[in-house]
Length: 425
Ligand code: HAM
Image (cartoon, rainbow, N blue to C red; front, side, top):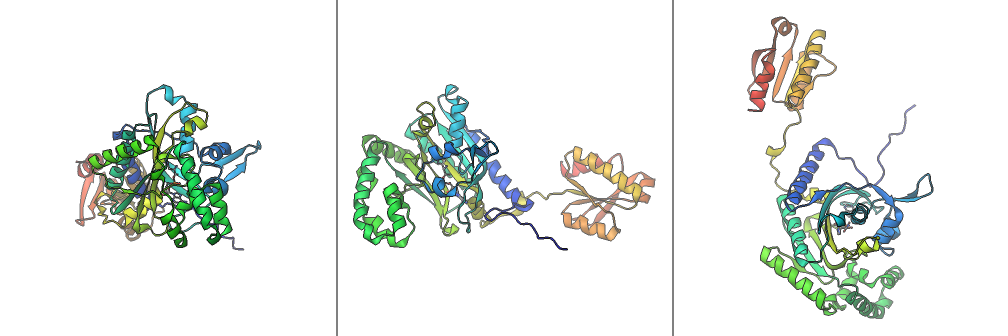
């Protein structure tokens, strides 16, 4: 009786070794650049109490109302797989009293997030983010530094032709006034909008500005904009940030309709998009969240950060002209063995070579010389070691350089040093 083939859950995917190598390179690049800017890596849990996200991200957001993977654990506690990392990082910051250590905490984290969204190209239910968060000051120079680090990373990762959109969505003083004016404006348009949209506007009018529906674009274009409502603080913050970015040579586009979909933001918000991504075009989103840490029970701590979607970032790096030079072949040495005692000898030899740091594989399962050589060829190894009865009796191994089709006999004692001199000169 044949059994059903089990497959992964919809909206999640496997990252196979070939692809995982690209992931690792990008993650290493992020670690390298972020550490240059003084960031330290933090590893936070994959799941948290549901309340952290409903309070932190906001009860009216799509993430909290529709997209969370929430379940009761065996104790009856409501648990949620993290849909993003900012709330968790703030929780960790408060719980571990990181605010007591230094004036400013710079943290980054890399890993999977979970959202129950409709899967499509570039949108998954398990996806990965690189997050960076700087907690401890409302100095606009920090906003500029965070953005500079982001753009440096995206540039070094090989991304080109990106669009960087920047806005300031006001603070707790001027945003409510703007929100009210926007709501009044949108209510005049309500007759042309469907029920779901009207309900969304009622809960949070700013969300309408996010609409991708082409029918809404003319309404958005004539809607009041936040910049006319900024108080002095917000105006100064935005202008100082823009000055820093201008001096640093960062290209950006002011976009007063950029609001972002999470409730914790205030002042600076930004998004990086690419035309080469299709409908899900945002590679990165971020902004300030000066009230979040206090909302989560910590001391008042202004903060800013961003998250890059790794799947989308890698989709863009795949289309770049990738030379394979930096792709080290997985295996450097392949050992072919003919006969039982040769198999045993080659097993010990492989283990010795690996201890020396050389990437070595064996032809498990034996077989003829021809079939083993085929496997050696497929492994991509530059050197093949051949061990047979003849070699054992002479105390040697045969070494073949696959690029030169050349074969030499080397004494058993000398082979490790010899290979090290060839592969690690
Ligand atoms: P976000 O805009 O929800 O922001 O997500 C950031 C990025 O994660 C997006 O620009 C996108 O590249 C990627 N992303 C989001 N959802 C998916 C999905 N379903 N599939 C694939 N990629 C996705 C945040 O998460 C905020 N926590 C960012 C932040 C950090 N703000 C301040 N600090």
